[in-house]
Length: 126
Image (cartoon, rainbow, N blue to C red; front, side, top):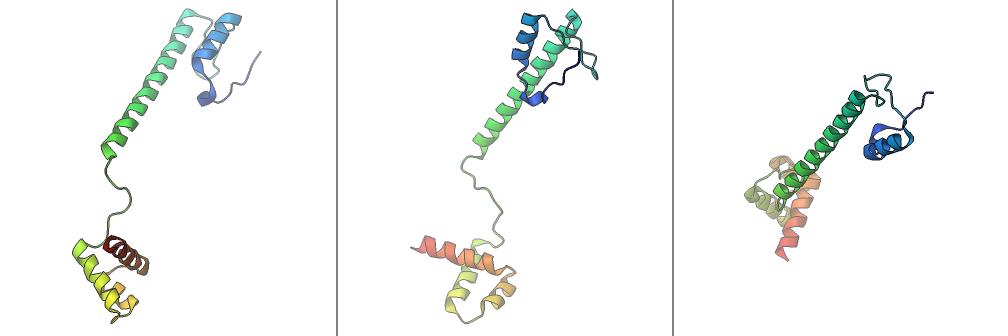
């Protein structure tokens, strides 16, 4: 008899092994040399399960340490202009002597970037 198993990531390996041992059911893989009806096959199956659990725990630990290390930092792109150049761009915008397109061309930024700098300056100025 041949059964199709669900996707490996959806199978609880420990629960599957208990289910197999209670019903004395063996698993024979068609592609890998795993046969849980033999002691060697059961050992191989348990080793694969232990290694998968170990790898999962390592990934969780690395993710947690990465999140801890990133606390206090802001994500996203870096600002294209230094704070001094941003202040110059905002002052040129507020003077209203040059058109927005010319300010952007001179500073080497886009219109949305200029408007975000202006908005940021207005929020910190309040």
